Length: 212
Ligand code: B12
Image (cartoon, rainbow, N blue to C red):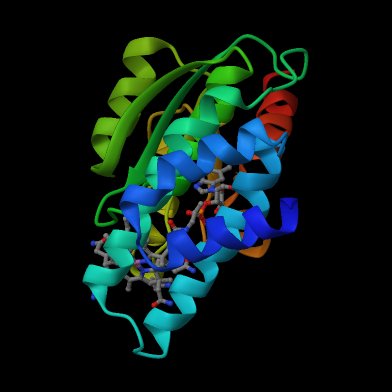
């Protein structure tokens, strides 16, 4: 039963069957499926399949966009049910954005949901955000953390630029940084001197550690 629903959720997302998304998500929750499992197993692997189809030219941008919108419909139902360990995080302020030049914001929005659920104050600047705006917001709000996301290789240098601008303003270390998203890696993070987390669950743990 649960395997069947899992397969259905993946099929609906991969096929961009947007009208079926919400009723199916509600059915999955009613059947006792764990929201975490839906997001991190089924939605993630559905989007990975969509990515493969895009890479092999079976899909083009309209299909990818439909799949993404379908995934958002599932998230609308599932995210409010996500139970986060509120003891995990310290109180803190986080400026969260997708780097300039990149519009992929699904992952960032999942991270936002997890961090908000963990009791942190999130200033979400959205997607395609200029570096200067990110630094200015962190200064204006006295935020302890700048968290940025990118899924594209060409926009990775923006993350390095954040480190450079923080150093220039003598803020490196005072404002801590964390990066994530498909184009990032632990190696890249080490190289530019920032923290990294592979997914939204780990982002809560890593940010809590940075706040200590
Ligand atoms: C959906 C999608 C789109 C949608 C985006 C919709 C949206 N609102 O986000 C649309 C159709 C708009 C799109 C457009 C494009 N896309 Co696109 N897209 C994807 C796709 C299929 C899925 C991405 C996704 O949402 N994954 C699901 C989420 C949940 O995963 P995630 O973002 O990785 O997030 C998780 C973790 O990484 C982490 N995380 C994320 N952010 C953060 C931040 C922090 C601080 C932390 C700690 C953790 C963290 O937590 C999240 C949850 O656990 C990927 C392929 C793939 N398999 O990734 C390609 C992909 C990202 N796209 C790609 C490309 C090239 C493009 C376009 C340039 C195409 C074009 N020619 O126009 C444009 C981009 C335009 C632009 N300037 O940005 C490439 C990027 C290649 C590269 N390495 O540079 C990919 C990898 C496809 C490919 N293989 O070629 N795309």
